[in-house]
Image (tube, rainbow, N blue to C red; front, side):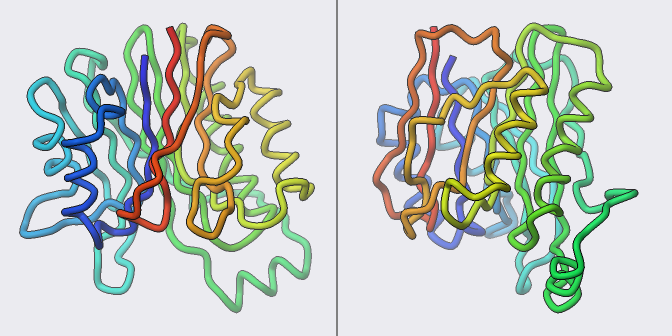
Length: 241
């Protein structure tokens, strides 16, 4: 199976994104495509344009989280037909009851209000996939958004394979306590990071994007990025046999 996650920056360079999808072999055998910051152009969702670029045999779902500077900001999922039994659903990452923040973070979030965030969930009897986009601001806040996805995983009937992919907005040194806590939370939920060997997924040389999977995934796997400038993020891939 091959999965890609890519924040496409509101489709500001959508023509370059579509060219990359059409021409790069990395996309030719794609099973799942988790997209963040998709939008709408010329009356059509970016996910629909990407399905057309991939060719026959794909379906898509796109859900808007908020309006950002006059543009729809959405998560999207593109998948090979037949993978899911029903239409995907959305999970709010902005309504977190009981969230306790330190004074500094509360002050920061009052000065820069959190953006609305969602995750997409698609599932069948064999597979469950989440497309996540965590907030830009906040440390505990971001961690609790990630835990909200893990709590949803735990609340649903078990499936053989669970995948969680997207943009964590993990700006800062990789040894920071928050990022260790995110990795620990994933580990406690029985997930492994397929992209742990990657060092850079953003033009700032930061690692912001990740793909997690339930431990059933074989050790015969690898992850990589494509050095294309169609967004401020790089497309991130993981594949296993």
